[in-house]
Image (cartoon, rainbow, N blue to C red; front, side, top):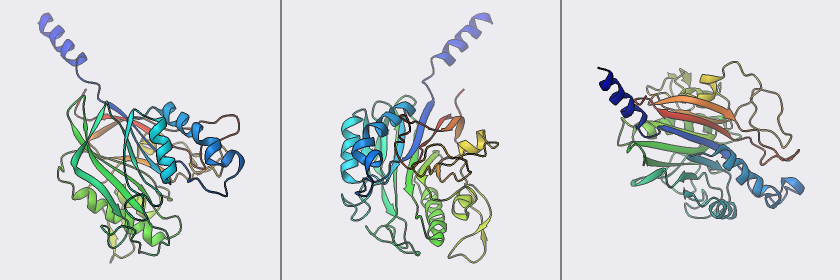
Length: 297
């Protein structure tokens, strides 16, 4: 009996590491009007430093222009990137791109791409629902090289002005998640949603019954996600992620989120307040979580 126990313990300790660190980071576009410490040239190394501090296995970025994508690709050689410019589906405009640690994760070449948050999601550059700016979601099926398990990753950036657009985006993303080929595999979602957890678009993804634009009454998604930060830190009141270039400021306006399906066990969740003196890497704080496969000890 003692020998069997030792064998069982050895098997458990030899199982592949099941944890994955995931993050979402709106890096702020390289805007000509951002001067001094707000300019991309001044803070770009701090952006990379912040990403390295979180040490994610996968992460999504928002607002990344082509030159910013080139910089991140060069400075983060351990990662592979996937995504397109939102304006033309190629290399024009902002990216909501996906980065994965190549030694840990592999992309399934048959499943992935970009869809536009509009009434014509396959049409590059399309927009509707009242948003004046094109919005997208980048997605991919990934395989964990350590466990051989697959999962789906979605990274998005919702509209900052149109509430109907945010609500329609929530419904569209839920439909796309439900349409994945391997429904038994879990899901990870990251993004700048320009909306807190109480917004109907976000609440819908979290399983709340809400009224959405374009609908005929209350709707409730049957396969809701969980937000690791709220699961682990419901008591935290100061959780602003839009820092307005001012550093850590009080308030509950958390608009950047990591969400996961029930196929994951949440280990850790945090907002990455990384600064260099008074200098911040972006006008958004990145958010991160450590998750593990729910069916592994």
